[in-house]
Image 1 (cartoon, helix red, strand yellow):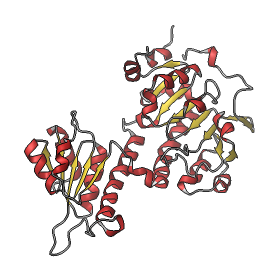
Image 2 (cartoon, rainbow, N blue to C red):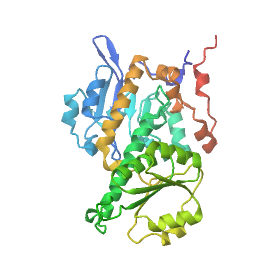
Image 3 (cartoon, helix red, strand yellow):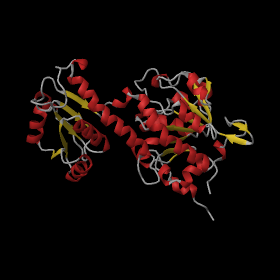
Image 4 (tube, rainbow, N blue to C red):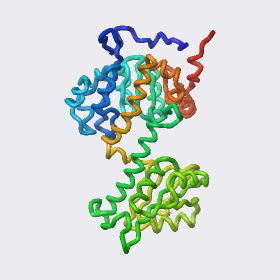
Length: 366
């Protein structure tokens, strides 16, 4: 049984929902990205709103989807209602790609749910305090695991970031990107360009596979051999893998036309002195500092919409957020705050704030 928190239990008047043919449809609020940020990504396309309209009422802030080049009228065609930001923030579920700012959190209905991706705000004490004060349940989609333990949302973003990083590089080497006018792939009589990728995980795997598909010569370096073995298996024999060693790293950096940097298996900081060894016209991209997918937000919306529809349909099938969390282990690990309590141990440890074991909140005392 779910332990009831009466302080944040919404009244009938507070529920931002509509009764249609005897069915209560919870309201989903879609809000626009902040104008003072570089974020462009958005969760739902018009078609995906149409697929959700039987179970949910879609309240979209006017012009919220402008970053993905869809107009309000296209969402209206699929059953969405165009409202003010204030009205969208009062929905039962508020969808924002990045976590809402504190001022907007305070405008949400007490006890409502925010669905977003993780971000630096989640590690700010003042921000967590605001979520707890308002009794907000926060679910970070990039932490959600599917029924077969796949991080479907994180994987989709990683694939787009990894693939897009190589298209960034290809353009940067050409005249279009103010480069010296060379092709990433080799052609008859010329050598392919050398791409050096440093890091581990699906994002670098997709970058490597894309560069290989374009005909580049690709080397992947990491400080863990087992991770390199996984990469070799994922990307094929054409991928050159190499453990990070000072002399080899310096040699690879000095010859690379493109360098893509990401997090390594073990702590690693790219030596600043190696910038002196780089080619003058090298293209360097740090995936820890930027998300290339912000340049293709419509692709992100199309890719994210599919698993998000499944996620929300599962919520409707299980009759609400509480039951979804209680009955779905893959969602429990994605919950940061739950109805006035911090339930993420890592964030609690970082901020020295007590956290609660979410599983204990769903135990039957009998």
